[in-house]
Image 1 (cartoon, rainbow, N blue to C red):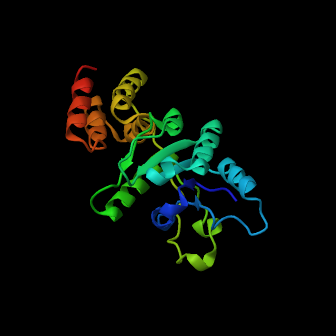
Image 2: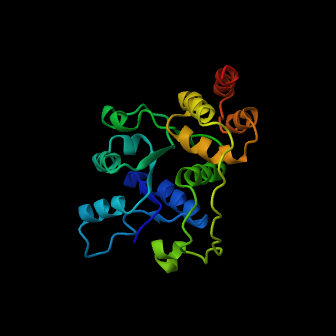
Image 3: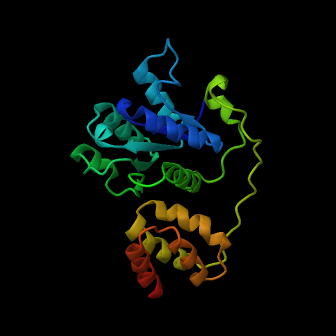
Length: 227
C-alpha cells in the first residue's frame, strides 16, 4: 500500500514519532511507520525498502538518538537514493553527525525544541502538504489498522492548481532568493504561492510570511527588492 510520508526515527523517540504520525494522519496524510506497518511474517529490511519505494517523502524525527542511529542513517541514504524529499523535524538541538550531514545538511529544518508541540506539529502538517501538493482522495484508514484510528473526515478531491501569471524568470529569481534562506523547500513554496499572487510584490510578501526568523525574513526581502 502506498503512503505519503515515511516516518524515520530512533526507537527511543517513539513517543514523538507516534505524535507526528497521529497528527499527519488526522490531517488525512497517509503515513508509514515501523513497527506498526510491518506484518509479523515480513522481513524487516525488505519492509523498509518496500515502504520507501511506495512513499512520496520522508519525515525525520531528529534528535541525538536518531543522529547516531545506524538504522536511521540507512533509511536516509535509501530515501536519497530513491529521490524522496526529506523534511527533518528537530526535537533536540544537536549538531548533525557527519554521515547524516552528507545527506541532509542543505534541507530546511523544522524546529520543535521549545514551545507548544501541537503548534509545531500543525506547522509540520502545513509543510508536508506544501511538499506533497494535492493529497490523493484515498482514505487514510488504508494506511493504518482501523482499530488505531478514529473515523477520518471525508476527503474532497482537490481542484486542478491554477497557473501563475508571473514571468518564469521572476519566479526563478524569487525561488533562488528564498532557497538561500530555506533550502530546497523554496521550490515548493513558490509553486504554491505563485498562482495566488497578482504581482511580484504580492508573491514576495506571501513567501516572507513562511520565514519564521525575523533576520532571515529581512534578508530575503532585501534580496527580493533587488529583483
